[in-house]
Structures are given as C-alpha cells and as structure tokens.
Figure 1 (tube, rainbow, N blue to C red):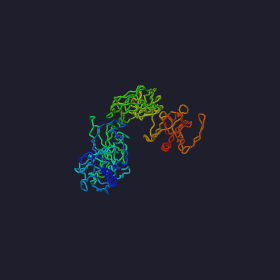
Figure 2 (figure 1 turned 90 degrees about the vertical axis):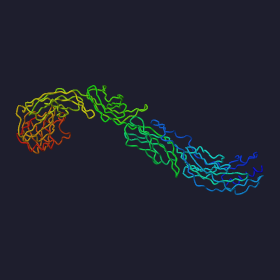
Figure 3 (figure 1 turned 180 degrees about the horizontal axis):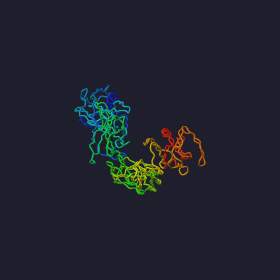
Figure 4 (figure 1 turned 30 degrees about the vertical axis):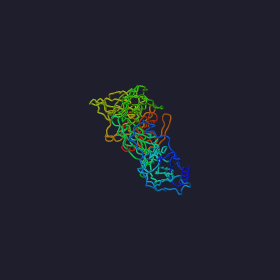
Length: 616
C-alpha cells in the first residue's frame, strides 16, 4: 500500500509537466513485466471537433443518370513525420514516501519511437510505430486544426501499451498532429523518450451534389457543392464512343477551390458525357484526396437543318425535315393564332401530313425537334419552326386583251391569297416565271405581234418563306400593235394601264420613264380609256373644278392635260400612301393621273402639245 501511494504522489507531481501514463507492478504479481494501466492523467480529452456523421455518397447525381464506378482507388492520406522534440523526462520532485523496495535503476531517457506512420481516411487516422524493447507503454498527444486554420496545443490524448492506435470520429479535410512518447515505469520511477511528431490530413468529403447548371448543343456547365477544407478539385471526364461505350475516365481539368463550377465547350451535339469531381487538400508536404461524386449528362441535340412544306392543299399540309444525328425519334407540334403549341405526333419518320387543317389559306405554325432516349429518359433537342398555310382556290374569270403589243391579263381576286405568280409557256415546253402581282391584273412587256402566247396564273399563300400555290389557270393571247383602232405611235408617247396602275413614257421609241400611278376612283371617277393626246400643259398650274358632288382647288408644279373634261397627268404632293396597287379602288383621283413628283418632273420637259396618251 505504501508503494501505491508513492506512485500516485509521483503522478501528481509529474502530471503538470510531462505527458505520460503511469504503470505499476501488480501487487499480486512477482513478474515486473506484467503491467496494467493505473490511470490516465486528467488532460486526456482533446478539444471537441465538429465531425460529419455520414460520408458523401459515391457518385450520386440529382438531375441526371447515376454512374457508379470510381476513376481510381482513393488511398488513405500518408503522414509526414516532424522533427523530434525534446520534452523534459523526469519529475521535478521525488515522491514523499519511499517505496518498500528500491526501484530498478533506469537510464535517464528512453530511446525515441521509430518508424512512426500515419494514414487517414475521411473520419479516422491510423497511427503506428515500431515496438520499443525497453518501453512498458506509450503516451499519445494530439493537436487539432481549428476552423480558422490555426492549430491547438498538443494535449494528452491516450495512454497505450499497443504500438498502434485508430483515432475515429474525425472531421474530413482537417489537419491532425500526433506526438508519441515511449514510457517505462519501474517501481516509483517513470522514464520517457522524446516525442516524435507526425501530421496527417483526413480526406475531404466527396461533394454532396454534382449537377448540370446549363447545356447547349456544344456546351455543358457542371457545378458542385463546396467541400470544406478542399484547396482544389480534380475533374475527370469520360466520353461516349460511337458504339455507345465510354472512354476511360481521364483528368480533364484541375480548378482552384474558389471555383465550384466548370464550363465545358466544343462538345458534340446529342452525345453523353460523364464527369466526376474529386476534392483535394494540399498543405505543405501533405496531400489528402477525397472520394468523387459525379454525374452523367448529355448535350442538346441539334435542330433539324431543314424544315419545309413539301406540299399544301386546301385540306392538308405535308411537312418534311432533315435528319438529326443521334435522334431516336422526333416530336412535331402545331400552333394556330391565339393558341399554344399542341403535339401532333411522335414519329421516327421525317415526313408528316397534317390533315386536321382548314382550307382557304389558313395559316399554321409548326415546330419539330429531335428526341434521344437513354435509360427511359427523354432528352429533347433544339427545335426549328415554320409557318405554313393551306392552299387557296384557283383564280377565276381570267381574260386577256392586247394594246400596243402588250398583253393585259385580268382575273377575280381569290380570298385568302397573298399574291399571284404569272408564267409564260416557252417553245422548249417549259414554263418561265414572269412576274408576281398582288391583285388581279398583269401587264406584259412588248411582245411579238401575230404570235400566240400562253400564260398561266397561280394564286399563292406564303408558308415559312415558301409559296404554296393553287391550281393554275391558263389563257391565250395574240398581241396586236394597235390601240382603240389606231396604230401604235412612234417617237414620244405615254401609255397608262389602269388595270395595273402603271404608266410608261417612251422617248425616241425607247422606254424613258416607268412609274406606278393612281388613276380615277374605281367605278365612279374612272380615268377615261382611249387614244388621247396632250391638249394643255403648264408649270406651275392651279387646278380647280368640281365633279361627283365635291370640288377641288389645288396648285401643282407640272400639268399635262389630255381630255376636254379636265383629266391630265400631274404631280400630287398630298398623297402620302404611295402609288400603284389597288389604291385607286378606294382612294382614286377625280379622273386625273396622280404621279410621283420625280417621275412627272422628268416627263414634263419631254412632253409636247399633241403627244399621244393611250389609256387602257
């Protein structure tokens, strides 16, 4: 009993200065080699560290398909052994009570432990060293890294007889330092080696989330959650091959810890890419690598390069589009004015006839896009749109006349038509396009007299930039070089076509001016057709008169009168809606030929009293 008290007094004296565990011989044992731990000193508990309760799931994805293989095996973090430090090895005072027997004489200091190694995973560290022949036990101290990056002081942590220790419940990505002392207790004397220090960083946790934050046909944006302690991230990538298999994971990029995202460009549309993100912490000579988390994703399919109206009838519209690489099928949608898109079909074909349409040039908007299916999940591509319309009815009431070697074609306007294309049949058996007009009249150029020409007129609607034609109507005309029973004039003259609202001036038998005009109000104040001549001219001139229940009094710069009741050619600065087309049907003149200023200014000097003016 006196021996036990003596050792405890030594513990109390020595405990404040040295890290140690006290071992004493069992009172019932004669073998001094049989030792048991009497007690641990009071400072054995380390400062509390925050630990994560679970490890990050390996390669779990939230928005795309999960991939489960690791690019490489993560090894535990290796240690770095610090230089040996020299703590004091003897108590400051001797025990007050002498032991019953004299202690065995011990050397003043034990040899240091050798071959200290440390390895770590996310939440634990394994510390090992070589057994010391003269030691009866070992003392382990620990220092931990605070959140601000500073280290705590070394504190007594464990007393051991074994030559290894597994420290659990650690925080991923943290630096831990361990100091190991060899200890020998003989009677009332405790002897220690110098402490050998080793450092290790626990592996950072895998990112909790890896997701796609943006995609296009040739670009993907990958983002991941920040990992505590990581100083950089290694990004691995695997790419789909032509046979559907994947290349091996290789390091694609390494980014600093302040970044938690990567924009990968110059990719292939509709191809699958796999990414894995591994956090790494580097501090001095220590490197700790965490497990990976990853994602499998796909770039967007390209839009079809072509989308056309193959044909349009009054009761159907047939659409066709080009092939999209890697598309398994296609989705086609239709939209009418004032409504949303509605899916028409999902098909592997690239031609579709829509029969659920209305006739008479009704317009529709269509959208098509490619689809790729991977593991029962649909990936949609970019779309392309087109506007299409059903065909309108054919032109009716077509007639043909001839004036001064010209053909004048007229017909009834077709409801819903955007315009009309006129073709002429050539001697080689083919139709040649001549002109596009927007109401029911066409005026040809000068033709060969005595020859029969065959004209075709088609009404059309516009569909996605293309013209959808009605059935054609044809008419024959044999030009004559007369007008109203008179031969064609020569030299200088003027021709005015009220059907097409065009005026031509010839000087020395050559075209000199060609211009749109506005003639007399349709069916009420029509410009008088016939073979006329200029009977008055003036610059400037004041025009005054009355007709049809209203009067006028205007000044014009140029005047060329050709009828006795006051019809003539003149400028009309008050017209702001332009000239030509069908203006004369709702906003025509009182019979005169309203002409753009620049055109009439050019014509007036060439005009003369008696100059022929043919109106047809």
